[in-house]
Amino acid sequence: MKNIFTAFLALILGFAFSGCSPKATAPVVTTPDPKTEVTTPPATSNPCRTFDDLPGVDRETAESAFVLYKDQLKLNNYKAAFPIWRQAYHLAPGSNGRVKSHFDDGVLLYSKLIEETADSSKKKLLVDTIRMIQAKREECFGADAYYIGQKAFDYYYNLSGLVTEAEIYETFKKSIDLGNGKMEYFIINPFTKILHDRVLAEEVSKEEGSKYALMVDKAIKDGLATCTGAQCETWKIINEYAPDLLEALEGVDGFYDCEYYAGKYYALFKASPDSCDVVNLAYRRMLRGKCALTDARLAEIEKVKKSKCYEAPVATGTISMAYDEYGKGNYQTAIRLFEKYINEEAPDKEKKAKYLMVISSIYYADVKNFPKSRQYALDAAKMKPGWGEPYLLIGKLYASSGPLCGPGRGWDSQIVTWPAIDKWEYAKSIDPASAKEANSLIARYKQYMPNKEDIFFRNLSVGQSFYVSCWIKENTKIRTSD
Image (tube, rainbow, N blue to C red; front, side, top):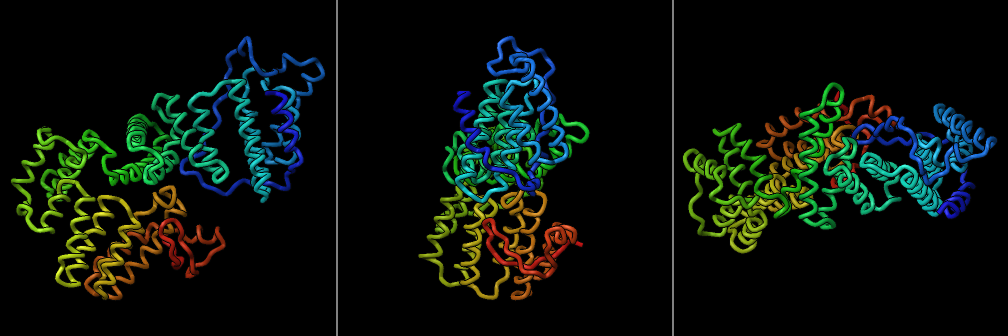
């Protein structure tokens, strides 16, 4: 293994630094700090060469190299640090038997090399070298949940596109499994995003996805309950992002069980037992979780529903049956019935447009499939020109896309407000009846736009055309919150 590693390392040494600069990416949560070096005595049988294994001159050279490359790193002088680090690493990969931060430093240095080359084949070789450094670290010192989580974090943010999504996901999972479900704070947001995307793409089974989604939910609740001081701000950031993605998975049939829905929506009902909107939502969601009709919590909600809230007549026609299925939380069945009515029974375009918007609303609020919701809203708008409601809803879809298109805070999550406001402005321009709601939404979301400093920092200007990617894929106009 040592010979293979050394040969492979030598293969890459021709790649040189040329004024590397830090990568301008903002992680969802603060980059994990390296753990404080272990101060316990070294193991009696370290598989990697340490200072103690070296003859006098080599030992002095190695110890000096470890100090000197660190000095250069502190100055962000990666070009000078690199050959000294190589010397230190080659002579004593096991360092003094305790210190292991040089492995992380090696990953950093090779990541800088990756930034400096546009050659995809060289990038691949450099990534392979990073893997070998990580493997050597695990050989020398083992790997706990924290280290594996840090590795996954680096893959996700620094080597995206060079390491497959499947490998990144499995690395996150390994960290969680090693920690027996306990999660390091810095992996929660990226892991939740990749879990969400892979579940929707059917690349992760519902059973596996649900298992890890519930672990994430518990980790966030535990973190919020036990945090102190500055830690709580970090957990607040996490709580503003990951739960939205977990909730979006409620749109996947059979993903969450009764206890998930009861834990969330029965509590919501208990907090607002006089709101029929909440009562109906809690009832619908618990049925979606396949809670038994004999479940005491569901029975309590049903009793309030029947005594205080409107009860639809017994289903007879297609529309009645569609609403009945919707009320039971059977969203896809309800959608199929609404489509059947639109295609086969609706007497005019007005009715077709109305129920296209009903389907759009289900995809928005319940199934959480924003692209499909937009498509049905646009179909409704074509069916009924001059109607502002479809564009009000599309604006809400865009404004709700912060966690889907970015980290929940910051630039990528803020710029979704621009196309949202475009849609609300358009709604009131074609339909005076939409003006009141459109103005209210615009006033509410203006505060979430980027500020002048954000625009200036990116060398942009107010009023300039800007393309918002993600699932939105629309041109818009730059505005600021101040």
